[in-house]
Amino acid sequence: MFFRIVAQSFRRQRRRKAIATSAVVLGTSVAVAMTTIALDIGDKINRELKAFGANLVIIPKGRTLPLEVGGEDVSRLGRETFLPEPLIPKIKTIFWRNNILAFTPFLTTSATFRGRIVTLVGTWFSRPVPCQGETVVTGMRHLAPYWHVTGAWIADDAEQPQVMVGRALAEAFQLRPGERITIEVGEKRASFSIAGIVATGGAEDDQLFTTLDIVQELTHRQGQVERILVSALTTPEDKVYERLGRSPRELSPEEFESWYCTPFISSIAFQLNEIFPTAEVKPIRRVAESEGRILNKVMLMMMIIVALALMAAALAVMSTMMTMVLERRSEIGLLKAIGSGNSPVVRLFLAEALIIGLIGAVIGGAIGVFLAQVIGQAVFGVHIGVNLLILPISLIAAELITLIGCAAPVRMLLRLRPVDILRST
Image 1: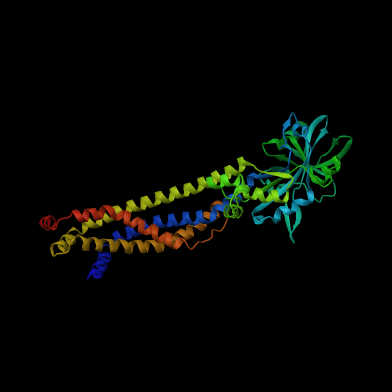
Image 2: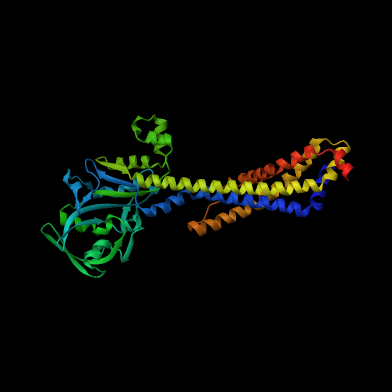
């Protein structure tokens, strides 16, 4: 009898049931799509953010980061120490080696160009580096894709010396790609062909860039570098691990293992320090913290969208269910008059809502997975993996919508008195 009444309800109120199911499908699909993206997009967003530069710098102990005043690197007034270039490939041998996306060394020197003191920077641009039986291509082209280059990037294996000129410097001297310039470093003179003009909006606009080996030769620093920039895929550190990461040697073995085996920026810096024991590995906090904040804000935005979608769907279900209760007042009054109490009537109504929720979960889950792929391709340009957690999430979302939507209609059912209903009919 119970199931026959439920089945007849779906036959007699097909339109109302379809509207309620559509609302559940809409809310569930948005919840599933956003959750699917949130579960898979964290690393992808971090990779997108790596287009804005490195988040770790390796410098010799006792050396400060470059500081220019009037075109002069005043950090050189301190003790000059260097890092060995042969150790650089070992960066890809740390525990989190797959999280190291790019790295490149630097060696800078002051040079004279047409009577003006400028900074000449030697670095890698796109250099194959052998690491544990495989070859990794790394350099500034991979570390700083945000550089806007007019002309061409320097080829690390170019036969003739090439240079890239900062935009401000190029505009001051009316330089164009393809021209040849002469630079003086101490008593040495070097002639270069301009490969391209660099525009970053930063200090690079007033600098000259060439390959690392050329600057090493001009400064007699073969096999030495001043600093190494590293771009690593990291996880935002929570408050506990921020505290633990500052003094890893004070951790218990269990805490140290958990911290070491999590790709926090502090743990990756610690592992790099093991390779370069005479160096300091410093997180570029502005970049690292910005990545964490952006990622957290994107996740928060997704959760807000999910909450709003669920609320909107629940309100639509509530409105439809209220109308269904009003349309079936006579049936409800008759059931109560022949001896059915509030509990059987409410169970009947909740059974219908449960069926609507199940249908909405199946259809909404499928649409949500498809929607996640569309958003992933359109916004991030990547394929979104489907997690098995989506199955319970779609079911929970659908049933949550129907339960919230049933709250007010159930209260109305409890207030209906059969004598009033039958008298009015």
